[in-house]
Image (cartoon, rainbow, N blue to C red):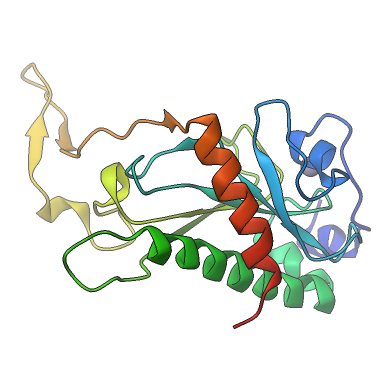
Length: 204
Ligand SMILES: [Zn+2]
């Protein structure tokens, strides 16, 4: 299939895709893992997006939470967002609304000694030969805990502290802190979801 073929295809849903399956859920509904739909721009498979609060977090579990931004239709590449002007517009609107809602909650809960900073990481995944989920999705996290360390796109990793695996043919590797997923308490998920649903609807 050529790129032109891909761009000319109508956007549909896939029967064996968890993100397509959750597309038709209402805001406030939970999926089988307990993740909550907290935002949706509309109901067109070719033009709209929805947001999910995940149950697990990879940033600091005391303050962090992870949102996913997902197109309603089974879109598998970032290039395909250009297929439809309204799809592209809603991509920007959904990113902005979810980011603002996330930072409103972080500011409410902030208890640090320095000035509050609305720091955030956005990491997108699409169809690749090694990705188990081909439906395009973006992860919105706060920059804390295990996620508060450099990634290759920031700068070459060779300047970081390196190590060498055992043996004479030892391979050089970069040392990084381990990152684990922690499940949020149900009470925390409910509290976050209620506020996200409220805040994500609001403009400034
Ligand atoms: Zn899908």
